[in-house]
Image (cartoon, rainbow, N blue to C red):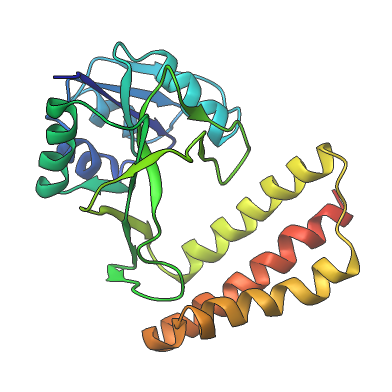
Length: 245
């Protein structure tokens, strides 16, 4: 059976981290890479693992690769502090490792919760995401935000979803969209990209139509409308900020 390292990056996650760690305490080891938390995050993590390390912030992708470098085993499950693996999900992962992985990377469906409500439409589910991987073959693209594992073309698919308690409410969501759009814009500007008027005028309404109409966000009621409009505004923000950064 392949042994498993779980990797988690943290920054002031005392509200979420215990739930996350409790759900993966069955793993062979847990590696936490903290970015100078000022709350009880590190204290809580040390109740579950003695492998807590510290690193200044380098962006989401780079940070996750630095965490994986500290893992003792080739097979890694990366999980965010506000995520949770179900009992059924844990058994499915263990079955893959016991039989012998057929793919270098595996995708999970993800159930995203907004203020404790599961968002079913608008592209929020199944929201498939690659998280279980062989670090000798796969690593994170070192982007500032919206990091992903590459290559992931030859990926297996697991059935049990990761639970993602993504946003505590509207204010939290808006704050993070503002922060993520800034990170996106900085990365694009550093690469020499500046948005054109078509990015600013056409892509935001296209994002709304895609999420609210095509992906049926309207079926989530007012929350679906809020998320579709917010997605359109986020799309505008991330391009608009390339004009000013």
